[in-house]
Image 1 (cartoon, rainbow, N blue to C red):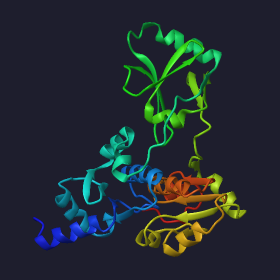
Image 2: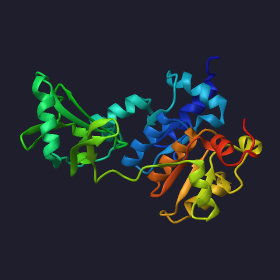
Image 3: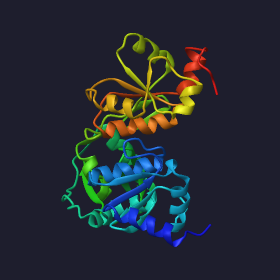
Image 4: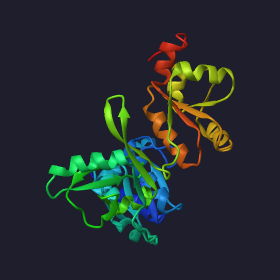
Length: 307
């Protein structure tokens, strides 16, 4: 159904109410999808003053914004009333520096990163690069600190770093995240592989299985939070878990950032997104219950209902 003039005017007021507005699944503290979490992660690096609108709370907003923006998916980012796009566009704008300009954020000058290669890594790169033609060895490290080391054509803005006779091209957007890394070539379970040690990498969410979590809960050495909505908690719950409702969130955010915290949902997907956001809040000891309450029921407490 087409938007009425009144509906269109209401949406116009919302997108202009703040300089930066993100329409997303969930909110900036706890995104409910990976694409929304990615954009929140980018915005958190650039500004602390932005608003989010949870489109899952109101079907009228979810459906209406698709027509208002002429964009079928979420998240949707508006800056000073201008629609910029969804996740992929925001990522591209961030990588090129265009998003920083839109937000009025001064870019910090970036210099070539310092990289150390082990003798084994140098030998492996030399052998692998003997027949790649004009391609170069490139390193990209994304905002989540996932590293991609591969041979590919040169890209504009790359930093060329010389390491023991090896020419490594580091993507411009990755330079700050790559500074000080060490690359080795080691034996892995599936064979020889490159191992990257990155001192810039922040703490990661740690997977924990039900049989590992149970003794920690019994010893009261970890706090467990349930990110599911109330209707799911009414079906099944873990006795020691606290609901992540407004009261639970207030309690969680009041904990020492070094506290061991575990999150769970039905199967472990939603809680992982919430756990990643906790890391961005400064928590350093965060776990995700692998398999969620479903796995807990199978492996620890069959009295917990499965649904």
